[in-house]
Image (cartoon, rainbow, N blue to C red):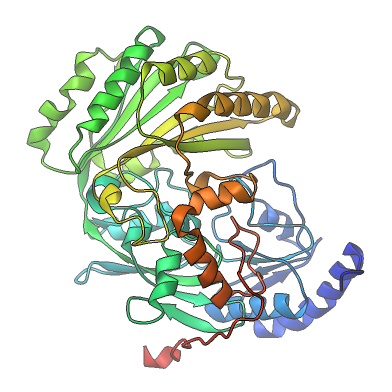
Length: 475
């Protein structure tokens, strides 16, 4: 097969794909078909790739058929749930894309405080259903984000101090493996696989259903205070003092921006879903500095979850760099303030998302997500509309990232990674990498699922035994 040209591979795949349609409840889209173009598009407009076939899955059986098809045709496999990863790994040239975006079930069990969730669900979809019962599970901070990729990579957001990361609240999952087996990952069945799904990404199969633990979340005190350029340095110092003293119930984030391309501004956002009578005292340090705008107020959790959405307009070209910092000293502040004044795009920014409390106290080996302890996820989020500006924006991002090196730890949040090489991927999985590689060897020895932040299998010929998914009528 190695001598086959791309055209020959696509032609062969097209012929075989037409035979696949008889197995599908969903749709099969070939290049040129109605729906192919929007299906192949992902969040990052820098990504422009053309799969040989898009398999729009409606059921887990469709996913199984798609995996079998790709394996038989020796096609690369990508999985698109939300398609929001900055690296664009949901699509590749000449491969088989499994599009799970139509699999949007959310079934809430109010009594057990759990939800069974399909892989195409966004954070907005999940919150809409769970909040109707006054419940939520910790997720991210932008509501149109796909839940699947977020959960499998960790899931850092407003409730992490009180209830942990998204992956910490993953109770079970149904998975289609590279061999075409359907397996359950839970504390009782394939517990090592569940461990790997809690932060190990899409390396071990295609998740067709998640079960999450839910928590009571109603009205929260949320929003942000914003400080002008003349107070930026003081605001950065204050933020670290304030965040370091936060109780578990109060989670924070900071952003540096240049609104409208003008002077720098610092915003500190909060989420406090606890006793409102304690809020005034807790938030007093933020107000004592004299922000020019104060948007902190009681709001629904759904409102807070969508508050950042407008900062991610559609069709933008994205290039991100990130790492973890544990201290915000004057030297780091100098780097931030020096570079923000030269940021080329007015819709870019620098963000610090706090990880603390319950999320920080989890044992680093208890889940595949290894980065615990109090820290900030430091993200340089560059975005711009015109591809002609790409070189300038990428150069600025890399220059700032280089300047940040003395302040960054060795790890990186896998959900922020672009195409940065094997070493950075290993940093994302940290000391859990070898254990994850052994798990990869068991469930995907040929590395069929390699279009991700990839963990390479240790061997191509392991002795693998799966416990198969029970029939639908026995569950």
